[in-house]
Image (cartoon, rainbow, N blue to C red):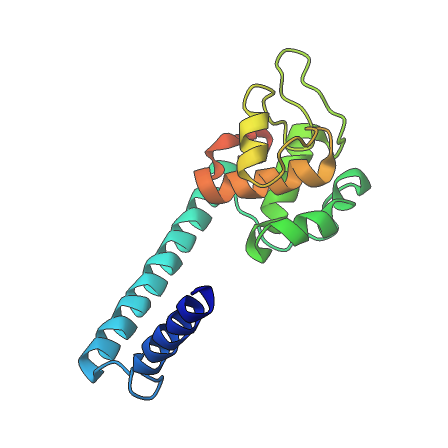
Length: 169
């Protein structure tokens, strides 16, 4: 009886698979392909506009930034390879300037009057949720890799307003 059920199931599955359209017969009509391509293009344009808007916000919030290689002290510049890894290329110098302003490149920096800690001075009460959302659940705020990665995530998901360094206005 079980063998018969298995055989019937195998036949039904094979029949169902054979009835599926092949890749060649499953091509979309031209108008659907055109609509799909137009949609994808509009999404790319929206993403580019959002990216440009974020760059403007970065400049307004923390001043102009460009290639400032050599402008940073060693304490800040040593984090460039890590920042390069997590931030988009056009945000690296901005991120290094925030590190310079917030912690002077000291991953163990702690604000004496608040819970702000680490290179980007993340607030202690917000760190666990932000770290988890960024994929660094349980990471220590003083871990420079986690601190930088979470800052990159925060910039992408909340914009630059989390950091206002008056030294760079």
